[in-house]
Amino acid sequence: MEFRYYIIMAVSFLALQFLIFCFSRTVRWLFNLSQTSTKRFNLISYVLANALMLIHITRIMPMFKEVALLLTLLLFALFISASALVIYQLLRLVFNPNKLSFALRICYPFAYLGLIGLAIFNAYVPNVIHYSVTLDKPLEQSLRIGVASDLHLGKFFGAKQLDKLVGIFNQQKVDLILLPGDIMDDDTQAYVAENMQSHLEKLKAPLGVYATMGNHDLFGAEQEIFAEIEKAGIKVLWDQAVNFEGKFAIIGRNDELVKNRPTAEQLLQNVDVRLPVFLLDHRPTEIEQHSTLPIDLQVSGHTHNGQIFPANIITNLMYRLPYGYEKIGLGHYFVTSGYGFWGIPMRLGSQSEVFIIDVKGK
View (tube, rainbow, N blue to C red):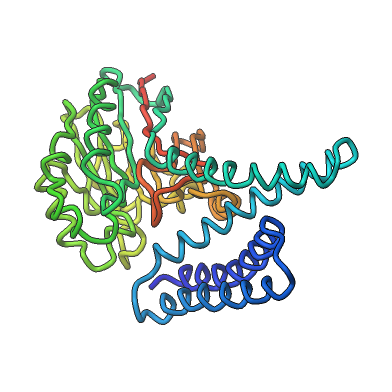
């Protein structure tokens, strides 16, 4: 397991204690609980929540999604509680404090459910974001590239979302489709059980569909995932390069979980760098190194743009380009928040999305 996951577990454990504390104070305010009732509620909350966390950490049972859902719901409660407190402090000198507090308690559940609804909407309703770039190399004719990263195909994201993605790319009339990693959500169980291949294989473009492996494609089921993606007619670039009849080249790198993977510089030895070079690299960790190489366009994902605020603050600190587009050095760099989601079907401060990139030569 990657070291960063141990850090995530430690931070999650500490965050859980803080969120339970805040939630218990919210419940006391909402229901006017007595001090005795509040203590009982606190005890039950801490015991149950920490038991769930410990079951997951000790691997007695895999409970990641349940823990993530609990943390998210508690976080949303904190957001609504903080908003209610701010509103109360701003208006208590204008309105009767008791009546204002009562009104806020009535509105609280509607605001809370509304926030959950917004988060689910963001997870399942994609934005289509357009970019247009001009390369510093000649290109015989302009290209329209469709990019969808981090599909995380699994129990909560499957056939219906694939059909929607097919419709988006068909409507946008893309010439080429690039899928930079995390196609599956750790394994192929749900993918096979729900016959998603018949939907994934509808993903087509005149110049083909190309994918690379992300970290969630490499958690022990990489051979099965590789085989299922290829069976759907998608070419998986396993540290490989493809040349398009002297027009341009595509390079696909495995995620950095693969030890001793070739560097981008090594993979460039297999292509004619006088041509436009497009790179699929799941994580945007080496953008600055790549910016000095003859790579014209890189597409990445992985960050999910934090998926749920305030995690985007963390990704902003971790990566040179955590999200969006920037011209850096010799190339154009794109990091998408992803089409699917990790863990739970919610996004806040980010949204499911597809990039459409129009590329022209000089």
